[in-house]
Length: 81
Image (spheres, helix red, strand yellow):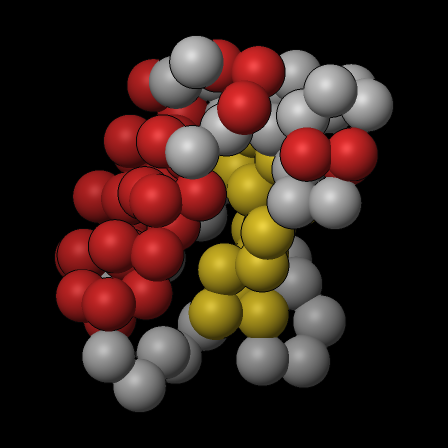
């Protein structure tokens, strides 16, 4: 299934980064969320499943910081280390 692209280029680049590492990106969020990213290792060892899903904001105040935050979530995945 083809997903829509994010309007902010920095966030779109972070979403592509997550997809390259196996994360699933799903658009079509509710409220202020553009969508969500899902960890491919969603298990109990991966931070108790607490951070295996993260929201992607549709209009972040600072797109560069939000993109950096999304990359940090992907890079700090306990199961991927």
